[in-house]
Image (cartoon, rainbow, N blue to C red; front, side):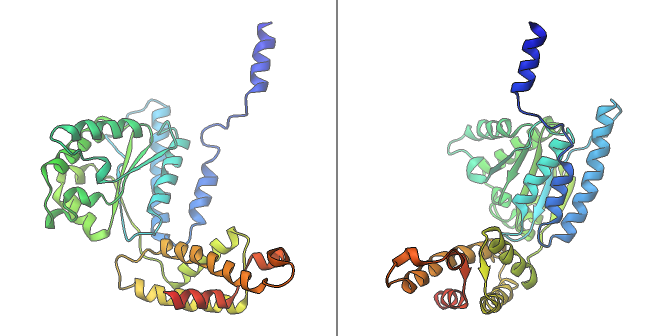
Length: 307
């Protein structure tokens, strides 16, 4: 009976993949991201190191006092959160983390409103992120928005001090990633030498150029099974070229986020065009599937006129 019960249990449970079997799929996903060539090279080196550390742990060999805490710097919309999530999955596959999860927080999630609240809040956040990745976006805000050029209030300093201790106490069970604008993150590190000494990896995410932004837009079109006429593609390229030129001078340019907003803004514009086209007999039901999935030059031109 016991063996029959055990067999039924095995058959009733879904197949569970072994750790490591998904590593190639994750690295392929990283490779397929638009741009980020320098980041990809550093991640390849990081994977080599992580594999060696994992093998030493597996064989119960001595390991240097190494942590995988990181700083990601660069403008918004350049893939920092995406890469952080994938790094967490890589470390999970290599048995360096027990979970393939990412907890994203900001200063508001770490600093209390009253004296004495902050250490408890930070500890609760770290415990929630334990065995995975803790991603602190706009981390420089903990130093008054600019590290050495800003002012760190006592509550924020308390958050930093508590976090540093917990990062050290749990370095085998937590990867903490601090992210934000390049200059601000540099000043943030300079203003917090204890943090700087605990960071093992620094990844710089550059703004996307025109061709990369166009590739991101075309990827969104393809993922939604939509089509672009030749004229629409030309109009989209012109508009994205303008965005890229503006973005090269604007540190707040959203990069992929602005392209996502562009794609989303085209949806109601296309819908209005289709509604005007089908005002006659048959109404909206007369629209073909091809028309429902097609973006036309007029849609792009209308979008630009509203910008």
